[in-house]
Length: 130
Image (tube, rainbow, N blue to C red; front, side, top):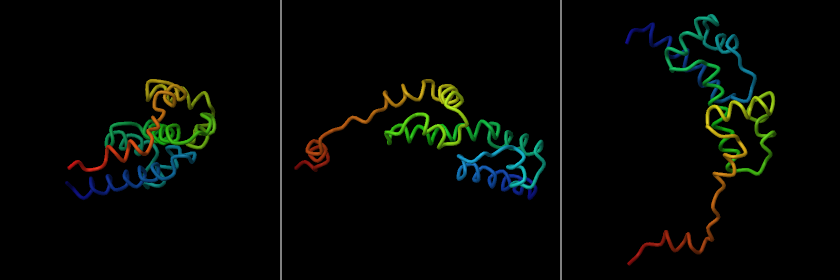
């Protein structure tokens, strides 16, 4: 791999790492391009070539992944979760979530609700058998 390719990959990784850390912040292509030290048009093309999806789609997917965790693990409202992960409106959150996951946030929460098993059964299942 040439030095130029390594440098480009490093720049794209720096921007992707920023999206992973600051997914809830309003990040746009010009801001990410500044982080990668390239022009916005070059950044958008190179990011897609490097990672196989646009920067916007990657950021949406990261936000939805975090929302999936919050929907499973908390009792917070769908609207609050949408705002927390960086979506500007409940409609945009629901539409994007449904497009990526294949079902609405409310349906996802209902279908993935944890089954509460009494601890006495859990201990019996994990105990070694003689």
